[in-house]
Image 1 (cartoon, helix red, strand yellow):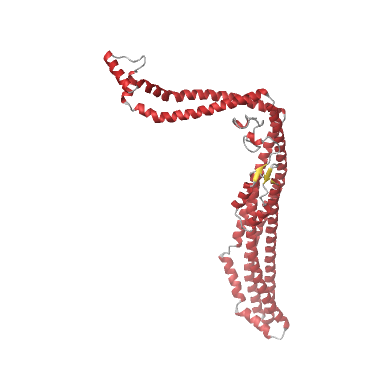
Image 2 (cartoon, helix red, strand yellow):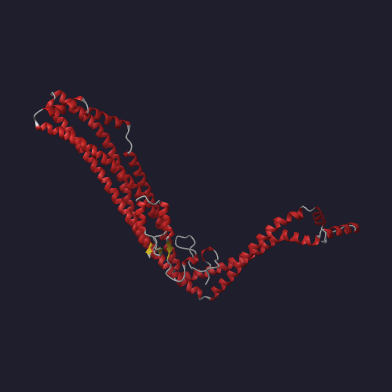
Length: 463
């Protein structure tokens, strides 16, 4: 048997694991970029030393200054972008920290909420047992069931009569002879006429079977309304019985302390919902920051591209090529080492940039997975699957399910479908709290857990 808390802990464990992965990738990316910064500065120093060795003083200073200028231009843009990314990372970190703090409070409230649910279910059984021994209450249940059945039958009968009236009344209303006799008041005290007229009307009435049809006509014209009056009377009687039953349930509910525990549980439930909403809001904010960071990394403005191209063109210029050529032609090993170091740096920078691009892709993918896990955890809480009596069938392998989810083998709908389809609520006692159709968060909690709670009689929830 797998409990709701077990599954929730597995989800949270995967969330924490994913958070560590995202943090590790971001730190790795910063480290790579810092290495590139250091290598770039090292390369600039190597070119400056070569220029000082092989060029006239004025030309050497020009090369050094030009290299520094172009390198600084690229570096300034890069640093600005890196600063923006750090700012976004700081906002992501703050949102995560705030959520962690909220999660601590949420877990505390959830513990109290769960305890209140346990107490509620225990007290429901006691109230139910007390009600089952109360003869007056049992008599109310029997009477309420009887009235409820009569109300249902009457409602069904009225609907049938109305349907028949809709079909049959037009036949009477379009029959000119029937309407003529009806207007004359034939067969009533209001009917008057000469002997000849009476004789003719009687002959006509016999031909169309007026007396029998008049009975049917009067039935369809007046009976639905008369039946509605009787139904309203029975409905009022049922409501009166319901009120008495609810009063009896409330009496025992207060006597055993169930009303108080329900009120407390509802308070905790409201707090839980606020925490879930606030944590979801922080997840939303963090995702927006992540999207902004991703867009920042994947966008290179024209100014940045132009600055990088200037630096590349300068490093490929005849002056720089001449420096490397001269160094290799001299017998000195020191300048050769500088050239080799420049080539080594260029190769390292290319590799580091490739690795940075790869890490950015991994970071984006890991962040998306974290967003999905956070959304899954939020939905899990919102459905109260983390409650004390929440259970899952043995067929649910949550760890394998989450692993497949992270590897992209399953969609969010597939994962949630597996979780919800394997979920059920465990009842500790023979009396099911579902008979009252309620829970702390259900909106129709019956304090007595009897036949009259939840705002309506349930024929299947008596004794």
